[in-house]
Amino acid sequence: MTLTLLQAQTIVTATLAEARSQGAKALAVIVLDAGAHPVAFAREDGASLYRFDIARAKAEGAVGMDADTAVLAERAKGNPVFFHSVSAAVGGGIAFSPGGVVIRDANGALIGAVGVSGDTGECDADCALAGIRAAGLVEETEA
Amino acid sequence: MTLTLLQAQTIVTATLAEARSQGAKALAVIVLDAGAHPVAFAREDGASLYRFDIARAKAEGAVGMDADTAVLAERAKGNPVFFHSVSAAVGGGIAFSPGGVVIRDANGALIGAVGVSGDTGECDADCALAGIRAAGLVEETEA
Amino acid sequence: MTLTLLQAQTIVTATLAEARSQGAKALAVIVLDAGAHPVAFAREDGASLYRFDIARAKAEGAVGMDADTAVLAERAKGNPVFFHSVSAAVGGGIAFSPGGVVIRDANGALIGAVGVSGDTGECDADCALAGIRAAGLVEETEA
Amino acid sequence: MTLTLLQAQTIVTATLAEARSQGAKALAVIVLDAGAHPVAFAREDGASLYRFDIARAKAEGAVGMDADTAVLAERAKGNPVFFHSVSAAVGGGIAFSPGGVVIRDANGALIGAVGVSGDTGECDADCALAGIRAAGLVEETEA
Image 1 (spheres, rainbow over the protein chains, first blue to last red):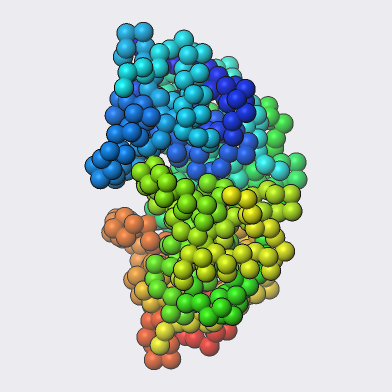
Image 2: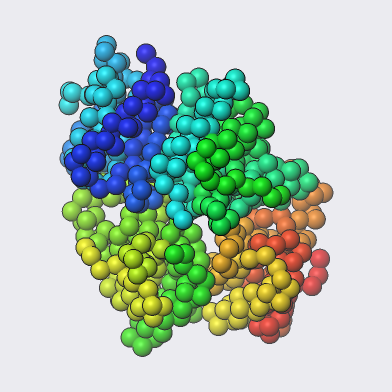
């Protein structure tokens, strides 16, 4: 299964709707496909400039390692030297904070990732999860 | 005047609607603000992977030089050595083909740019112009 | 409101005047606009070569995250793994030391940032604040 | 002899004064020292964003090759393959258009370069030459 633009736009819309219902800070949200290439992106008014790069690095890290950045951030705390070297090896394409969430199809196959940045990592991840569910897709549930 | 997410999403939607009405190939479209930072992006199903980078480079070049890439592409034909060096100096952030279109407010101030890639440069630019007009904004008209 | 060259040059002049009145080490000072692009820069005689890059990274970080680097440096101490990854994700465009100070207009809108490097981070930041006030603009005051 | 900040700021001021007296388009002007590191910079209101990078690449190219970019641009037209490879080899730090002008002391020693971008290469170079003369320094005269 290939992630469609319609699905990606549904994820963006629902992620931002969740952010507004939670009173989150202004966010940026990106959806990448299984090759880590951008499908859809939006930056809310007032979100700072680096939100694009950070959201993208969260989503790239999730696709690149096939794991949510909430998991990767925990691993990185326990082994920072290795994960810093990973960050350098992949040209900065990974960010160690929740908000990068893997998207799976009904069979568990990786089809992309969402990256959200602007509020706390936990809030960013909550919004991403709401977005994925709204599109009828499956978020990462294992650790 | 600052370009809003709502305006940027309207531009994306209308650009892709124009593409579908013309039977264009699958496109990617990006909208940047006046500082050349991404506000909204969409890649249609079937558009190839480099469409994001090319659309972005068209839009960055338009904002960075304050001129449509249709104009820049003509200038580059007359002085390829200089424009190749510009491309290197700005880290690749310019693409010499139509489809990067400056967005102005009613007073003529630069507020961002649209970048479109996927079909011919002329078709890409036509779709971008339709998108800007649909948002009630002003495209570049001078040369 | 757009930051003008006159305002930026006033900030540079007043920042360096403050540095001389404090007997600070030789400094570099840069002023960026709201899109993080350079407007004015000066490096005092005797300031070392990397002062340009460090001052710029302080100012870019402040604009990019919409927060003074004094605040970002504190946050980075509490979560170094994440902020190292942010540094890589933004191509080095952030420096975790005081001296990157956001510039706001009277309505609180972000219009740019000053970056200063050469003495202690605290001294660098003091000089930047003096520069912003001399231009009749508003420094970041919240945390 | 080492280029001072005072000399560099005099060059910037006089370059922009010449630009205004000629009715030139909005310019950016940078002064680099003999190590190709920035000493002073200014971007006039309305100058587009890439003017910093292009002005810097002109000045870097002049210092890096110890020749004005007016000369380098001519050489590049006659041997584009080699000069494209130079551009890549130096990470984009050279631009093949007039406006990068070497600064010499009274003994002919290289002490820095000016880079100007915004109008035609010829106009840019004229303004840079006026700036260097106003500082009592010596422009490149040989080819």
